[in-house]
Length: 584
Image 1 (tube, rainbow, N blue to C red):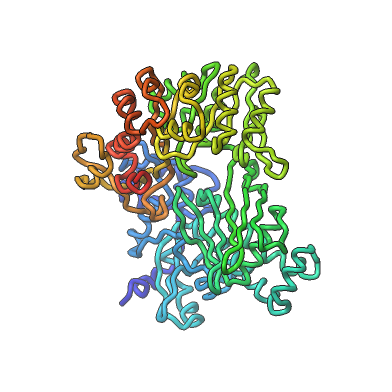
Image 2: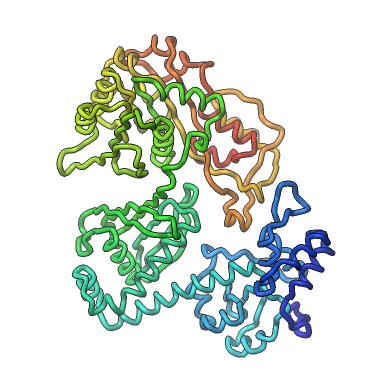
């Protein structure tokens, strides 16, 4: 007899009294806490697990930890004899599961199909003892019913999200039968109401879902990519791309056109790359900005949208990830009255965030700060921000020239990428201005040779450059599931080479749980090397100098990037595997 069959006679909904009594006997909740919960008003209208969770009780099993809803759901799974299931839309075929039963039906029963096979359908429920629906559902779907226990709030929100996407896709497909692709593209590009009124809700429903879902998943980028016969949606989460959904190619075309309209792009222009911007309300007091970019590919246009949270402008230097001594040093060099401070690293390594946090620290009423960026990623009302515009020959070097007529104290240049910009940055620092900028080099001292290659004279570099910092972003191990292991000696040696550092007795590696969506990581931190130029380093800066000579001169005056990353591994913040992925 199956687990489901065993519980037919138990058909009932969970009560708060039953849940509290069982939690007390399981030593998860104390008797005093149980009495406290019972006395709270309005709890009877919620699911018992939600009622307990919203009381914000400490978890007696762990120090400084509150009882989470997922902890309670895991307990319920064990209590009822079913498996626990964490609902992750990235691992569920939304189109397949929503075809099993209508939305109204699953919403009334508060069940969610999460897996479909030839013989059975697995349903997630938060009421494992309410089994009266099983016979009826078995007759409807003509398959065996399997049950797993899931978070009640996740079930309800997933029902809304999954069926919203299905409804939007179905609506688009119905309208597609009446019009061909060229008709729809023409109507969208001319804002014709003949189809927009019918098709727009379906298209906008998917577009809105993607934006909200990307926000919930902490995605920094959304990729809409046409492939052979299908369109693939991917999110970049904590620096890595994950497939989210696959659409019919015709649906992808409509969704992409919708985003192009929102971005202010020309819908009928597909041969040339385009750029645009979107502002979107995500929460009541939260507006995100999105930078959109399209390029033509073999199978059609590809759209990438980078999400910027305006609240990033509130990030301060203490949140960047500096060690205490390095934070003090960074503040000292950036607070100077003149000179150049350079931040280096590849695209996506957090350089702009570091510079904006530095500007926020330096900003005060008596200071005039001017920035030129391409594009402006983080908007801050305390600065005068200018965007590069190549159509009117406004590049970085021209912007610096105009800034010098604006009585600036501090100038931030988005990137030094050519001879003209490097010379203008040097000139600005020589005339009594602090200049902050970025370079694309792999390590800090390579920026010296890069500036020399751009034609800057060695004696001018010695006179202006104050400090150099190379940085990377590495993912942080999930606190809920990281596991202690003995470090792999060869991996450790690969990490610290060519330096030396004692191997720790243990490190942590990723595992994967519902908190981190199975990735084993949650969030990112900065690892870096910070070099303040001293007399010994300046003495070797000359035409044709090798990076290795610069590092010999700087030896002992800074902690190399690899060793700083290794220290974060030893502290259990990140893993050897992650650091090797980012730095090697």
